[in-house]
Length: 387
Ligand code: FES
Ligand SMILES: [Fe+2]
Image (cartoon, rainbow, N blue to C red; front, side, top):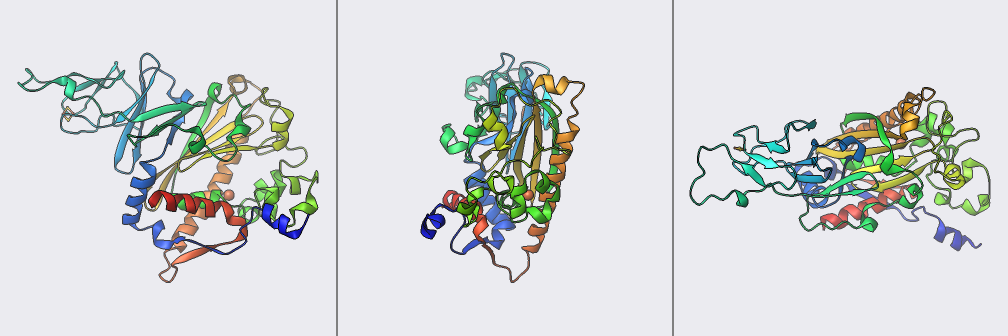
């Protein structure tokens, strides 16, 4: 293979690329623009279907200044509405999550009541409804909602169409053998990070930081100690082609089965996985800007991101297991939960340092190195949405 071919197939950036302008990471006006053009125009992850399985349970989400309520109807259907009353506009559901007492959403202000099933206004609280007023004119404003493989997704864009190709990237086909829709949520963790949402995603999209920030992860995934995410991220990749060493081919270190504190899957490997899935060691699905899925031999982790402000981002992680695994006396989920919290804590601390440093008055813009090709793609995606 010629050097030119090597270079063509290598993932790395060959020329220096500027990062995004520094003020895009903290300027409130720019933040508002991103919320409008990106967060309120794309499919966003709400939670796993198991977390909203019971009839009449709900979740609320704040997407910038837009509050949305996502519910499971008494009949088991998913519904999503703007969390706003048609009378004079009060918020309807005030908790992050909860369960309605009846099939009606009742406004906490003057008790107008709406049917969960379709959002129609079922009753007002007035003694007599005035002339010229028709309840049919005041249903809740609907929000697009769909479910993909157990992932509940919403979109605030009234013209939104679900297009799988546009939504999940990063090899979602590798998730095919995971029983995603039948798994159950064993643990949930919420963390508020003091960084812009892009700062966190940039960190997710490179492994230059891995040896320094994630020493424990490097022991499980030796490739990461080479500061890369994929075997073809370095120009010398052809020299290692066919190597069985996980340091070059990727996958897990010898004897490691899953991402856990001790590397063991505790004899609870997901049965539907084949040899290829297990030898890959980890599989990802990403849907910008709100979610990534990490799938391992014995569990799946889904991480949702939502911006709270220009310099605050909420992370909610869900750990999914097969029911039998979660109920097994010989399976201790803290083995995988603690490990992921360790890694996510390290990423979050690095992102917060990154965020603070970008405020230096002379720092107008960073620069991307060859290994940061995924960040370049992410920046292009952001620029396209803002255009
Ligand atoms: S604002 Fe909801 S009933 Fe008045
Ligand atoms: Fe990391």
